[in-house]
Image 1 (cartoon, rainbow, N blue to C red):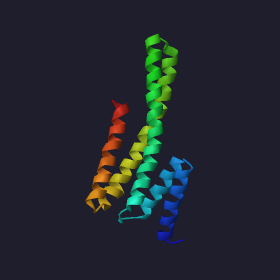
Image 2: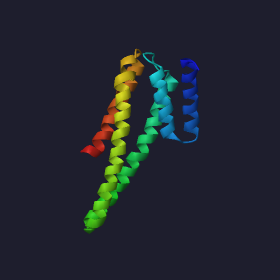
Image 3: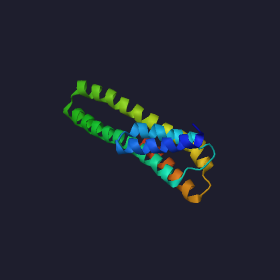
Image 4: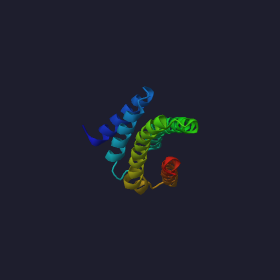
Length: 142
């Protein structure tokens, strides 16, 4: 299979994964597209697929983190220290997932996407993504 057909296949598989709402797999397919594109710029469609994949993967974790943090505050106000300890541990697991996802896209942006972007629109798109994922990290690290 040539690199070009592999790229097309991965884009197609990313679209299938999106339809099936399997966003983690969508991320994997789009990461393959980025890595097979080498120094070549992603198309608008590929760029949007990558963004949608990561947005859905991170969005679910961010929602989980907000819910767990809210429950933690309620339990703290009730003075239920046993539950608070369990919640903190669980929140830590979610935070580790959030960190891993953010680190993944930030590395991809730095190593491949921003450097290969020649069109101003692409560069702005990737820099905005970079800012978004740094903001997501800041939401729970502060």
